[in-house]
Image 1 (spheres, one colour):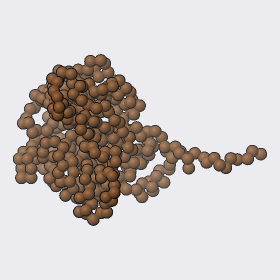
Image 2 (tube, helix red, strand yellow):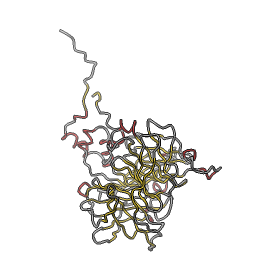
Image 3 (cartoon, rainbow, N blue to C red):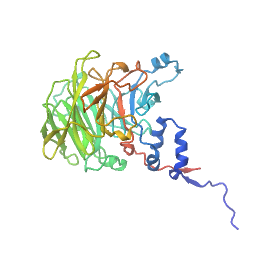
Image 4 (cartoon, helix red, strand yellow):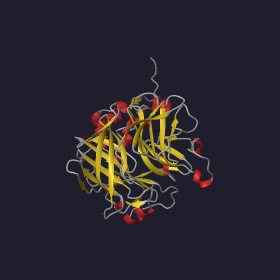
Length: 408
């Protein structure tokens, strides 16, 4: 009789963990850990509750927070960078801390398809998933990427980036497939200086390139139904063409309403439609450029026209300084349909402010009223502009479908 090999342990397929046992484990974890669990593999993500819509608070200097609120802080740490996270579904708005050494010394300026966009001076752009730690270091974006810009020297040649998004170059499929993103992925940067759009095509380009002859400034960019759209100066919507070929260009689609310089424009995908959301600022007691109302239009790309919307049904919109998302209100506990949840800075640029000074609230599209909303229970926190982070919307965009089989 053959003697069994007792030294070899059988392999266990953790992706087939029974639902009852999986739920027992989840009950013992913090909400912030639910996101890490959902990033392990597709089966675990399908069993994780889709309740978590986070407000991220980029706080480079948390020493003041620890000192003010009595929590021990170890001065021997060589990296004081943390993210503060507030789960919107939590009625207490408890602040969770996530140490993120990968973002040390960098500015977190936005979110795109599961990635945090982090910047450093001189055009250094880095994409990072804060929960899986998946990351993508991009080539340095310099003035050499803009051959139609006159040559200048010194400090004036520094590139300032306002927003970064990702998409695909070849078709209209979702950017949630990590394999297709590695071969057909495109990173699009909206630059504040120079006032241009730049793009980098993974698997094809060695350096950034730009659309020659198309200067801005640009108001917003989005990847929608397989194409990149942008709002350019003079209030025109443009679409990028030929990104899978040698000579990409921008084509004018339509004109949109033009308001004052401080008006904020957002392009938002909602239930398959492309929406234009306009934030109207005013001068109120709390700060300059404080939000007073919103207008929403549906962009009919084929018909090249705008349709003004009076309501968005059971959808709710989330707007921050750079990004905008549409979510079903039934997916997030405590949120109301036909409402806009917004937070942003009253000032231009990525300046640090205390949380209590940020322009924030909830706008009711039906009766056009504004409500105050306490997104966080720590109002004195000092931070860069907060970011909405809806991880379950693009959960597969960070390459977390590698499977979870292991030895037991």
